[in-house]
Length: 147
Image 1 (cartoon, rainbow, N blue to C red):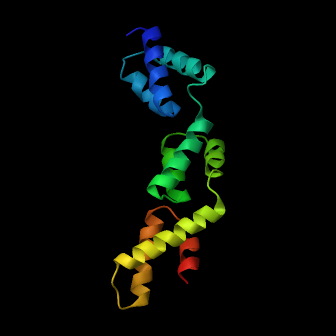
Image 2 (cartoon, rainbow, N blue to C red):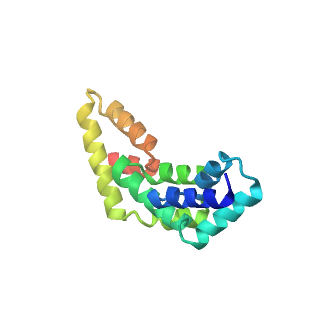
Image 3 (cartoon, rainbow, N blue to C red):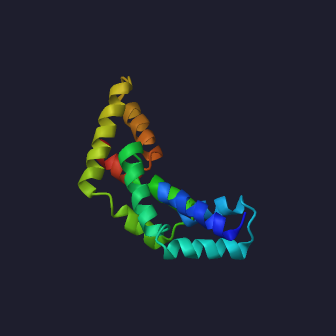
């Protein structure tokens, strides 16, 4: 595959949905291109605004928070795995409104408590807290809410 063909393919790939540089780099490596060609294509995609890490981080945060009910810790961890910069992660997390975050926490607590049957309140809270912390909510926030 030539560099021009790869650029056109990656432009379509990025136009379909927001992508980060690591995803594009991985896809380009599957085309058996050399490092210089890969970097050149990535620079061109950035110049043409097909690739934007901050925009990706914001879209990722909105999607995972609204669709998957993830907390900030889990979102941060996944963005870090995608090699997103700390600045872009911070900008992305600003997409979450604090009142919406607390409302989501409250809704998830209520929803989880309805599905569990425990005679002991302590065991019930333990189970709910473990669930929410696994979803990425901060442990101190979860325990403050459960108290």
